Length: 134
Image (cartoon, rainbow, N blue to C red; front, side, top):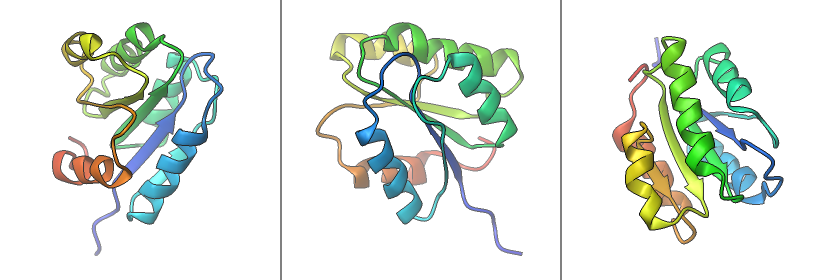
C-alpha cells in the first residue's frame, strides 16, 4: 500500500484579505505532490485549529500580511495543543519582522517564511522537516 501524501492546510487568519500569495503557495504545494486544503480568508484561530484536526493535516501553513501574526500564530498553536493535536507542524509566512521570529519560534511555530522565500524552498523545508503525524 502506498504511503499517503503529506496533507497541508494553508490558512489566512484574522482580517487579512490579501490571499494571492497563499493561493499561489497552495497551488505550488499541490503541484509538488502534497494534498492541500485551503481555508480561504478571514479564519479565526479556532476555525483553523478545528479544520486542521478535522482534515487530519500534517502541516498548517499560516499566512499573515496584517501584522497580527504575534497574536494569531501562537493562538493556533495553543489551540492545537489544547485539543491534543500538537503533532501538527505549524509554519508561518508573510510580512513578519525579523525581531518577531524568536517569539514565534518560542510559541511553537516551526518555520517562518518572508517575502523573497522561494516556493521551492518552502516545499523543500516541508519535505525535509515534516513526517506524517510528527
